[in-house]
Image (tube, rainbow, N blue to C red; front, side, top):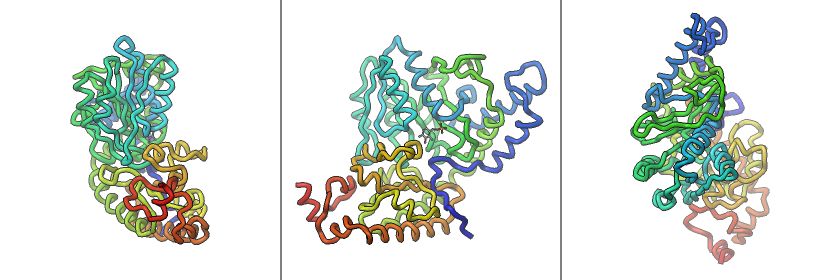
Amino acid sequence: MLTFPVYLDHNATTPCDPRALEAMMPFFTENFGNAASRHHAFGWQAAEGVAYAREQVAALIGADPSEIIFTSGATESDNLAIKGVFERYASKGNHIITANTEHKAVLDTCKHLERRGGEITWLEAGPDGRVNPEALEAAIRPSTILIAIMYANNETGTIQPVREIAEIARRHGVLFFSDAVQAVGKIPVNTALDGIDLMAFTAHKMYGPKGVGALYVRRKNPRVSLSAQIDGGGHEKGMRSGTLNVPGIVGFGKACALRMEEMEADASRLSKLRDRLENGLLQLEETYVNGSREHRLPHVSNLAFRYVEGNGLLLGFNKKIAVSTGSACASASPEPSYVLKALGLGDELAHSSLRFSLGKDTSEEQVDFTIRQVSETVNALRAASPLWQWFKEGQDMDAATWAHPSAKVLTESSKRRIE
Ligand SMILES: *Cc1c(COP(=O)(O)O)cnc(C)c1O
């Protein structure tokens, strides 16, 4: 039985796994101690819960437990990593390299530092959403202290050439930070094998609770140090003060342990379901995949439906499908997604894109319903659209803004318009 709305927005957040919730429950009530209380059993129990969770979190990413700093989420982890390195390594330099397709938590942190004397190089992603490692290497200067490139993009699912970037960073003695929110717990991520020095991730994007995240900070080869951004009682080795969110951390740990066991099977099932969804929808004319199809998370598909408006689609779904147009963080504003624009899409085409992100509980029935519902809505909107009529008659009204970067064949009329 289908229940509505069908949730296909797992890149925005995921439901908390009941098994993670169950692990958390005692830490709200009987085991309510402060993990920093050293003098009694209440504190010891809480500290034990945190220590166990720290092992579970570290294990998922191939790290040592001492390399995990608990935070309130990935936004804080992104801020701590970038601002913390900027302040700590000020005597070495002030230059950071990042890309224009990063999450706002990285972009806005870098913009903040730009106003505080930082120099930022904004790499432009290619049409497939990936940064070019050669361009990255060419941007390195003697004053470069940090490369900040995400693992996988939240809007398109595009996976960056992380190991190549790490290798370049290592060769030039520059630290490599990666926002790996969308990758951890979905595909194998290993800080040792991947060569990452600092890495942000968050519980609520991997079936854990909201309001808890982590920053991985490499302890050797090289040993990375940071300036704290929140001062106080010296928690988390002085890098992040504040009473620990013990239940949240315990739930995060459990979610990591579950992902470690179940990630592989989920990924192979979801990539088939995603392909079924995508191939179903690509039957529609003038429909394009945004971002790389080759280097992509298994559960994400971002599609552009030419000549259809994304908000019109949402209305047409009549609240039966929960998806995003553009990024969840930017959806309060009607601006076209800056990530899609960075890939070369015009405003119109960015506005006609939908992000489908599947989760471990997504069923084939839900996918088939979505294919039918989206196809019907696209067809109905196009049937009522003068633009679509003109396009079908061969008079392409605005080929330049509606042309997808991956579209290999332009119609004769659109070629004429562009020339
Ligand atoms: C969701 C998200 C964040 C923010 O994580 P929070 O824990 O919600 O602060 C950061 N980066 C990426 C890529 C994300 O998808």
